[in-house]
Image (tube, rainbow, N blue to C red; front, side, top):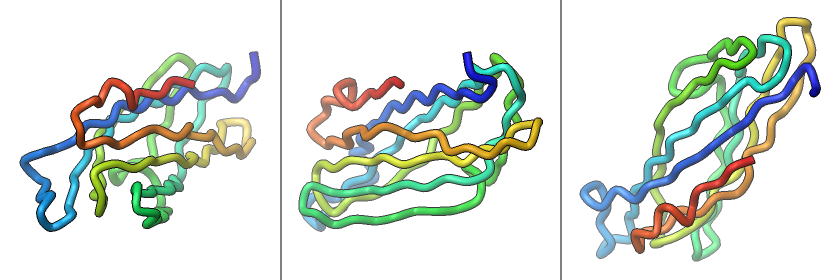
Length: 130
């Protein structure tokens, strides 16, 4: 096992009451669980997301931390948060990465596998584990 490993689980959900399909506004939340599966404490420093709807519109989001925090995760600890986005189409995808710094000074990116945002209600199909 590497000293620096994280497991990222994402569960997306369509939010009908914050959406307006007649105006091409589709709201989604996604709950992310980040677990430190390595041997060394790591701190999540920044995020990078690529959000693409089925019409081809792409948004790129970069920034410090997640939901205003830069959590420090000791081995075995997890951090969970929920955030959201809006699409101009009924479905799309998200993927990206988190940038971490470990307690021993190592810097690394943890990829977040592509997952599906789908307003049709099949939210369980969007679940991604890696």
